[in-house]
Length: 84
Image (cartoon, rainbow, N blue to C red; front, side, top):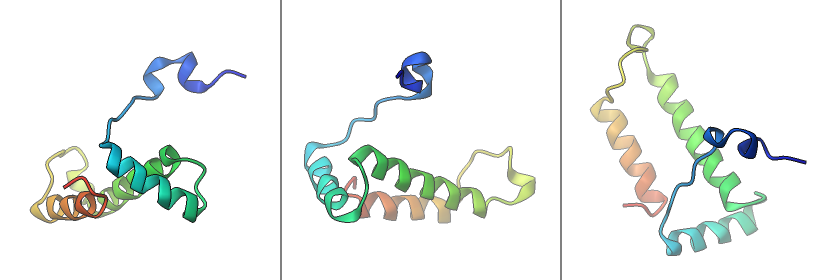
């Protein structure tokens, strides 16, 4: 069985995170029912992206700039994940 990422190398990328953060995430995964740290990180990032998408107004769909509210929300989320 071939993984989708192997068929098209552009379907997945590697993101590097600090080892201490990875270890903390692994603990969450073990206690939280996720299959892997990757699954958990993808879940969190999808949640963040969907939250961002819901706040965009229809007329600003083509506008890629973030509001100060969105930037602050991202900072808070990254801090809670141990990035900041």
